[in-house]
Image 1 (cartoon, rainbow, N blue to C red):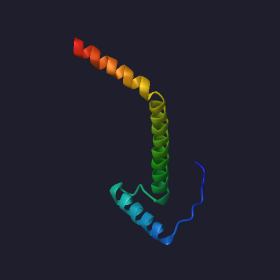
Image 2 (cartoon, rainbow, N blue to C red):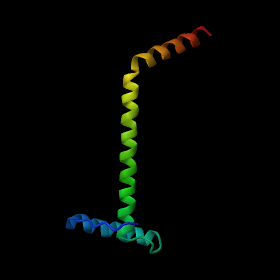
Image 3 (tube, helix red, strand yellow):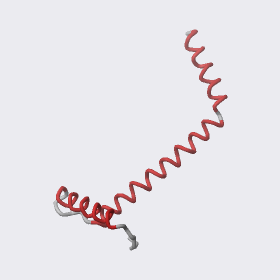
Image 4 (cartoon, rainbow, N blue to C red):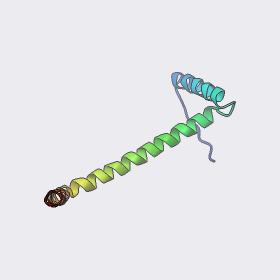
Length: 82
């Protein structure tokens, strides 16, 4: 692991300490600021990557909207005949 220095305002630091203390109590003494920050950063990065992937998917669907709509219509008509 690499060491990273982060500057936080007092209010955020107090909230981080409170969350860390609560996590420590829940996990039997296995949580601290670093663990909470790592978990939060990991969660944030995963969320951003998921958002990026969804945006790419939406762009692909938008580019092929007409063809997909036509194919869906053909499938529905085919099922209605069956």
